[in-house]
Length: 487
Image (cartoon, rainbow, N blue to C red; front, side):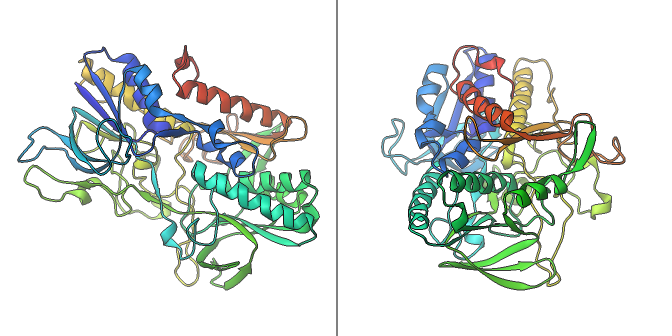
């Protein structure tokens, strides 16, 4: 049997390592990724403020896969043939090499790879083009990739030099579109930025503004949280606002950025007002779409709309019926991440969520302004493990159906959001939530368990985040006893 994994991010890499560990050597595990490096993305925010270098958050994939006996193609998948085709009757994917130094094929070479099971873990396409002028090719910075983060840090260094010379600067951090996700990364970055300006002695020269598509601070794309700490329950809105007030960071919520020009952006808020904001430095996250993939049946007919939603995310065992917010149900969310083809799965950002988690909102002008569902980090790794275990059981004849499940309405997540990287003066918010998607059937008042949904700010959180950085890179390198470290 051959299992092919498209993508080597957190979910795909987790699945690949577990499959190789649990399947006998007579079965093949193949990973296809356009990138040569694995990147621990949660630490990119530290690269973006100069506290880490790219080498601290990346490593060479091929070296790890060679040692683990996983075949690796540095390539991008472009087409899926789940029923085979006229010239190759078995299910296969068409891939295109993305590296001149690829030992399997030269840059641009197209190869067909057959599979018995396929896992789509391609992650997101960074859709900077959704907002004119957004992104590194426009007028803003990013920490979405390690290269983006490195360039952001270099620009920040220059800005700090100007501030030390007496210049006043306006720095804007947040989301660059009304339908962005991963507000947590922007949250972390602005507080690390504020901390670094303090450490460099130029905080008084900076006006900091957080620009977000969240209807209120602390939404994080999950509809907000009720955080229990020390016997008290605090809404995440209050928790987040207190951090912004204490650090003198201004905020603009419910915002959709229409366009960005040099040192100026135009945005619209939920009340329908259009405003302009001048800036000297901006780190704005883009919205995500699925990685471009086409699908064809055995007669060559394009069946992409059957496998993917309009945004390019793969449809799985979710309920995609159009529903109002009041009709949303925990049962809408996928359990096994299996598609209509029993041997194809989609995990991490690659799977299509049935709807948002936060309440959908539009401005008075009809512009959608609401966070898309986050499904990165710990949830992605859990999905990788669950799907890998199901495929192992299906290959070994334990069952003809997936044996493991992990609905986001039934699993929790832990997050450590850095607020300043320093061994003695730094801090981080340590948060847990259970479940990720609110389940008001089980928890009628809050949607989540108050026992398992907590939040605390302190220096211990910084040490935990630093420890997790090294632990998960160790795990991802498949070093001795890596499987002991949980997702």
